[in-house]
Length: 288
Picture 1 (cartoon, rainbow, N blue to C red):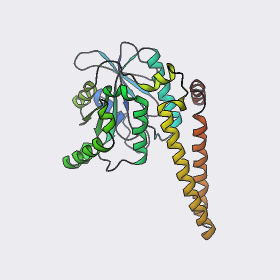
Picture 2: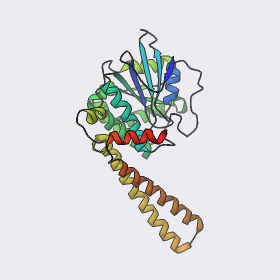
Picture 3: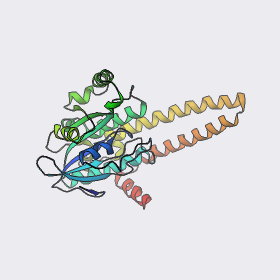
Picture 4: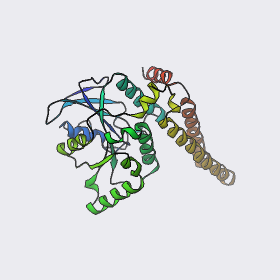
């Protein structure tokens, strides 16, 4: 087993592991590669701040497999724009290099008792990024089964299939339960189709020459950011009314912090309109 943060090869069968922060992406890879758990993040902060590539030989046929650990769109340190640019850049390189991105594993905590805003946003952006044609290569794997009873888990699973995963399942996506074991990880990996996944985002950028904000996932993100600005402006208006009535220093501080968040979100909206190639250059220049 080896880690390479840069490249995959044509000889690799590539498995991308995606999902919100805290769903167990690094844990899934630890079990698949029989590691000792040293790289697993147990806190609320994002463990995967970059795209991490872990190579391993398939336990049955011995062929090379590259497991790609990706950050979620609710990353602790990076904006959704930065995460999308990072993932888009990697997908474009993979697509242009004719690398076999065969399987996409999307993780979801079965212990979540509701589909919260950030979790729903992650799912919507993931579905838009993949597109309908790639769904037969997608596995939604539920995690954290030890934190719920069998009855609670089954009830949550049925609700998710009925209300949130319905369209993805209709397009050929499948679901599995990750049971925190080496065998369970590989059963999930092997459950998808083995041929190349026709992921929508790189095809939109490379073949259709779309800007990032013109792609399906870019449109979803744009709508989410606009909604976030609206919600925060409404909250700021209520705080201003409270300041006028009370002149509370804590409320004033909260209002200033909220205004800063509004400005940051507005900046993300503007950045979405920058051409993708320039965004990639700016992103990596900023990391240097």
